[in-house]
Length: 253
Image 1: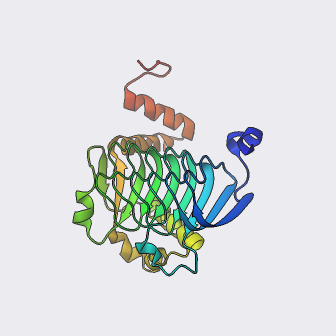
Image 2: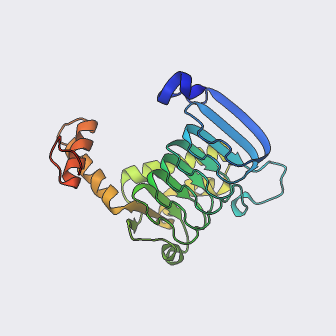
Image 3: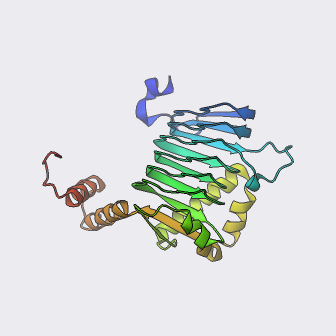
């Protein structure tokens, strides 16, 4: 009904804010539009945030639950499958196939299972704990920040066919990571996020940054075009034609 009435623009942030306690069932928050914020104090099942379309999801353990959130499961498998936008902050670990086919959502989670970010085409994923095997397989867009104190082991789990793996280097990357950690700490109370933020400059050395080869090349060309004074839209179009070898107006074959 929200999308039918307000379209892709949705509503102002947090216009509709709902809090739930207990265990959320499958596909909780599916297709949630911009302006809708859903808090879960408990845990969530598979397909949390499937097709998330601009909304915001926060999942954290109930304060009365005697667990260490960073070491405990908070969501099932296939979280954020096919998400196109929005944000998700999970104070705990999620299962396998996290953010598969994500094309625009930004999320922070404290650990995931196998095949994370598979076929991802956009968005940003921050993982503050262990990842499973075959991370980033088929990932052609978007970026990921992985916090690890065992870099060699983490790199072994990454499928590097399409992505570059390096440290967090640019000011833009640092600013994006800091902002996402601040939001995660604010929404969930994550002790891990707070600890990293308290020593952010030193902790940067414990992050690895992933970006697909062609996506990075495209971003570089867009930045070069924007530096010439053209609009962002024209810079993106020019970069597309440069990357594909097409001429302006030429239909893709």
